[in-house]
Amino acid sequence: MIRLSQLKAPMPPAGALEDDEVLALIDTYNRLFAQARDAQDSATASERKATQAREADVDRYAQALRDAKPDPGKGPVEKAEAALEKAKRHADATARATLAARDELAALVSAKRDELAATAEGRAADARAGLREAVDALEAAHGRLGSELAGGAWARGFPDYKKGGAPNRLPGLRGPNGDEYFLDAAIAAMRELG
Image (cartoon, rainbow, N blue to C red; front, side):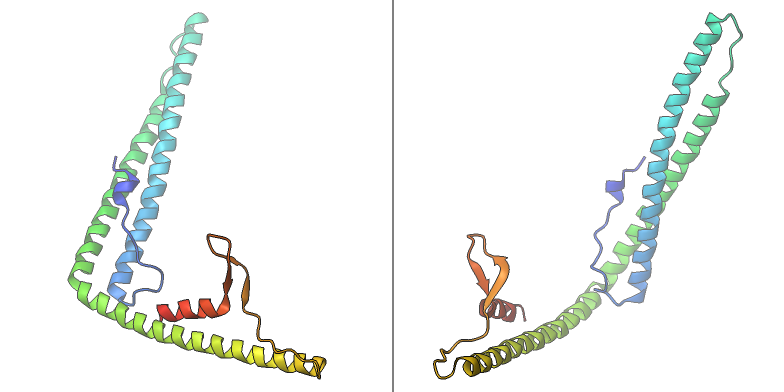
């Protein structure tokens, strides 16, 4: 029987692709992989039941011999073994179907690799632009918060007002050495991503 690990294929993150043909094959592969996983679980359970049926059959036969009765027959064993064969056949068929879908997906991705990569890279550029806009908005909001807090502190503390600014520490975020993270450093790091 083919193992599930032999059927595995890495998948792109959700929403990373727009190609309908590739997405349809990914859906087919995922559906078949789930069926193969369920079929292998079923085959494993059927194997357990068949083993239990064989053991129970020997126990029933031994009891019949002790009681000087005829062989009770192997009906339950035959039924369990038939179920096991059916489960193994289904597991093998779903595994082969999954492998075929994976191979078809690999061939399609290979044929469309440049197109898929260019589309994803274009979308990544758009996402970076959106990240830059969000970082700019965060920085502006942080500056606005500092101004508003300073205005309130000035009003409450006048004439003894001492200049302050927006809170800069990020509570709950600490580096590996235990140092606190600060918003201005986080903004600078986010700018590197964009």
